[in-house]
Amino acid sequence: MKGDFSKWKFDPKNNFSGVLHQQGRVLLDSDWNAQTQITTHWQDLAGRDVIGPGVAAVPANAPDSFRVQSASVDPSNQVELTLAPGRIWADGLLTCLPGEEPDLTADVSRIATYLQPPIQDPPAEESTIGGGIRDAVILEVWRESINGFQLPDILIEPALGGPDTTERMHTALALRLFRLDEEETCKNIKDKLKDDFSQKGKLKASLQPPQVIAGDCPVVE
Image 1 (cartoon, rainbow, N blue to C red):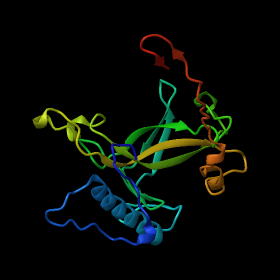
Image 2: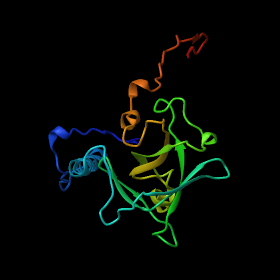
Image 3: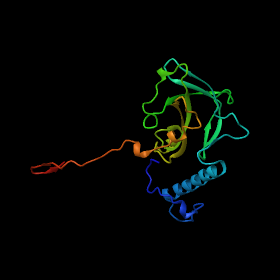
Image 4: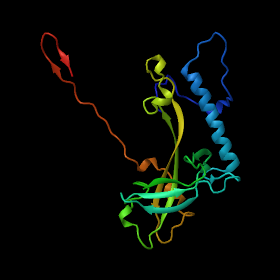
């Protein structure tokens, strides 16, 4: 999470179930955020324990949630998917795809993009779609923080002169495409979709020797 936090630390081994605010005490941002972390951890763990880790499950009363109804390439050469709105539990994370006005139950359209290296190297391209070509639709889910500059209508307080205040924890989603080989199906590509941080790019930083500009007021750069 990105934000102006004094401390962002959570250890599930402590088995805390909540934060208790005492009267007359200072309320720190770390206390508030600790409650968010405790609640989020409980929700995620409950979802994985009940539904199963690495599982995408839809509610029994909304079995068509996130069902891909159609796929096409639009005039701008982007893959457009039509999906049924609803809810899905992805690895314990509750993810929602809301309907749109005026009919909240009607299918919704979303753009899907191909997964990039190191997941699929080289990546597929929209121009290669044709007869006999198969792509798997991947639901990518992650958590992120949203600040007032990203969502000013909700998080900026004009009555106070427009400062940003709190942030929001947001469960984001993206629809991705994975080009399938002849022997591959949605059931046997799971290992290829796992994050491998050892294969991701790394930044190596080094310091330059300082330069001293002499004079009455020496400057060190």
